[in-house]
Image 1 (cartoon, rainbow, N blue to C red):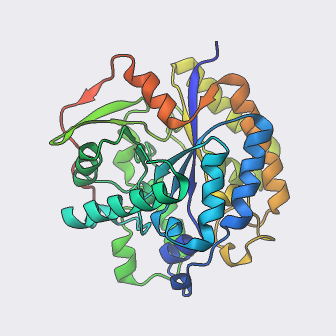
Image 2 (spheres, rainbow, N blue to C red):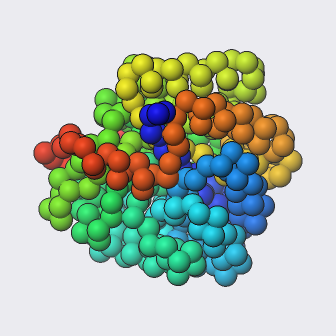
Length: 323
């Protein structure tokens, strides 16, 4: 049997990218969900894959998005909680704000999709001891907010350079993509101990040994320069995962299926110079390779598989990180 692996998609909408980037007009909540959801669902249907889609509560609260979001669970995919307001400074929230943020998103997502989320991923990989405690207290099965790479500060610096953010806004976003010490976190799943009980952590997998990102946005970034290099990079990453006994948990983003011809307003993102059709072809090829080497399941199933065997525990939950 092929080793187990999981796949997820962070369904960040157009307005959330604009908001984090400091662009005006995000308050109208412009959306591309009607375009991107059918597009990625079709790719997953062709490859016979079931995944986890992390939904932002604010999108579930907008009636214009209901049909697109409902189609996700109708197609048999799991839904997860990606916060309500999609603010990468979630770690700065008070306990009351965290409780309201997670509960509101959870309720809206369940109302639209018919499924209560059992997993959470923080926007911009933002999390805190309080977030983990609230998740455990609300009965969540797993968190998926850690991103074990040393390159977070570089990605953040590039993002800030391309943004229209004020000094104060950059300070709010100072944990975006994490700091260098994130690269030392485990690649394998483990359990946090909180005052509300334990919760499983399933990290976003980075390349074993080197700890560089390997999810599909980075593959597309490399493909701008060389498709052969991008495919070789991804193939080598999967080889290292198998060699080291890592069951990977990789993620997708909406912009992996959208090009500059679909969303010219988001041209500041890497690989948005590519056409949407070209991105879809490359991502489909990469997912087919992933599926040929691993048995891909939604994160909920991955979590149950992990919890069916001894799971390393960390005696202390992490302290809020600063840069």
